[in-house]
Image (cartoon, rainbow, N blue to C red; front, side, top):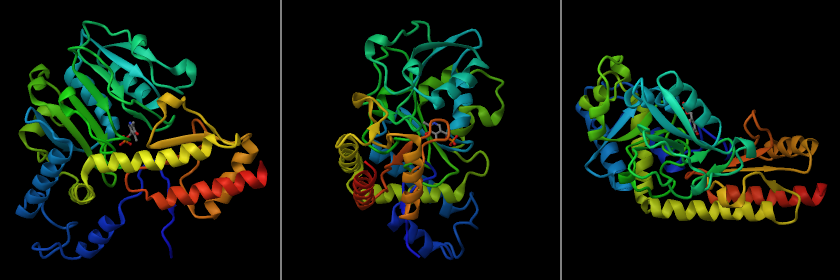
Length: 360
Ligand SMILES: *Cc1c(COP(=O)(O)O)cnc(C)c1O
């Protein structure tokens, strides 16, 4: 029994100290006399867990007082709908910057609510890049501008947020949330499913500027109205107790490791090492344009599909998990989230070097 090298795109690798802590506390949560799986969401114990998770998140991201923190369910996918239902007026328009499949899905949901202006898309380039600032065609009437900070499937990432003037900026940050510092004050709303960098599946973190809630129309289903969750501090109904507890432990671990600046430095080092291996020798080929490369999801190809099949089979046998690219694009994808240790990247780079030597 040995832990594998976990390159899964999500749910993904978690820090070992967090898993050990969960194991330690699973039968009896200190002070509770029962497991975290058994406590009431109305208990003092859980209230403390929730408050501490929020406080840690606020410290790590320097979340300004203007913004509220929510722990919701339904995944990032439900946020595609909630953002539009709450902030896209029925007779209004919103700008969407389309850089991959998740952005396409967000557009699809927004179109059920109001009009969508595709402010930019890199579909014709196979989503291999992030659009340049000059390519953005923003609608001055737009209720908000939505973008995807990291494109999990295509392996591209915004180096910094798009310049959108005064329009409220909305970001699907699911796959690079907590991988680097973020200027939360620039955003009206940020959402992220926890299962990439922040914890296990089952909870979605939303940061939203409270004054924007004045735009929310009445009559939405209660659970889909952000005001419900703001008013009830994420406790309108039963929240995902265990997932929030685990996110709290991940945040505690991140703080102990030096916060987001330290995480960003480690992530840059890991991705740098892997991209260097891809770029050397001409055997492997990165699929994203260099200026748009993701530090979280590294996508690459081999000289032909047959070799890719052999590579993935041999990699799996050697203990590398999760390397096949998304089923819609194929190839190889190594996800390098915060909790993936450098040793896993080093082992993959060694494996790649040996494989290229053998088959190049
Ligand atoms: C994983 C992912 C999603 C989907 O998240 P769910 O929690 O499964 O709904 C959406 N957007 C991005 C960028 C993702 O990486």
